[in-house]
Amino acid sequence: MTRSAKGTEAGPPIRLGINIDHVATLRNARGEFHPDPLRAAAIAIEAGADNITAHLREDRRHIRDGDMERLASSLTVPLNMEMAVTPEMLKIALRLRPHACCLVPERRQEITTEGGLEVTSQDIPLKSFVAELQSNDIQVSLFIDPDPRQIAAARKVEAQAIEFHTGAYCRAALEGDCDATERELDRLIAGARLAAGEGLEVHAGHGLNYDNVSPVAAIPEIVELNIGHHLVGEAIFIGLYDSVRRMRETIDAARVGFSSRAALA
Image 1: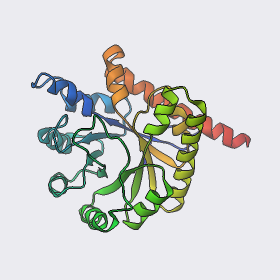
Image 2 (image 1 turned 60 degrees about the vertical axis):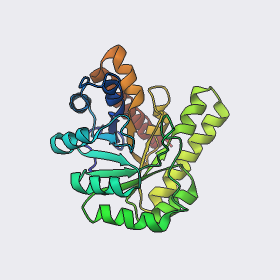
Image 3 (image 1 turned 180 degrees about the horizontal axis):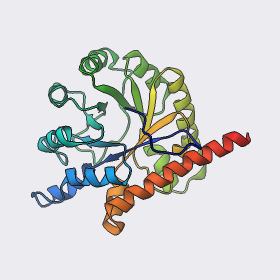
Image 4 (image 1 turned 120 degrees about the vertical axis):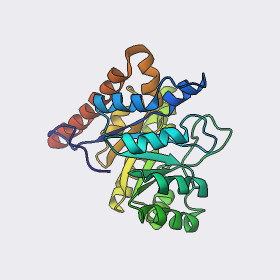
């Protein structure tokens, strides 16, 4: 995606993608039309989002086909379509032509995405899937764990970007396990350096919130964070604009802090 002009001159800028899936989850609880994910996207953009992410799952449990069509035709910022590696989703993506597609694993019974895509075991079919999207001017990222094997496989299938699944880091932080939190953060740091060195653009997301995001946002090789559930939940209490705005300010401050530490090193 195009590098955002947001951020400060004091540090490398970082993009903020807002995932609006769970606005649709709330809407679908009543089977009606409110709240509208497109309206949520507009508020998020006003509050500082650089792009909008929406996951069209095979079971359509939150985002629906009509949502994707409206987002693709109406957004003023890039649309990042999360999708499973299936012929149906490929057909939809080629018709809608979002700015980017993030390929994710999908299990019908999971509550949320439980881990990264297993790229090493399906690199041959993935390579042709990735190539077809890219031939239609769609940037492709792979949602993977920060594992050197998966990073190497992502490079092998010629994806342009990867997005690290930050769930293990976030769970450790939530549980107050300092050793595990540090270990998982070190995996993200090492993985980001390795991936950037291989020419991959590095994104991250899943489970990030105000309390745990700063160390991830400070990793200089990570150029985009995609965050949704926490911000939609927080919007119940403080409103969506303020929820997104606080995250925008938090990750920008983390970048400034990184720059200041680097200058002193």
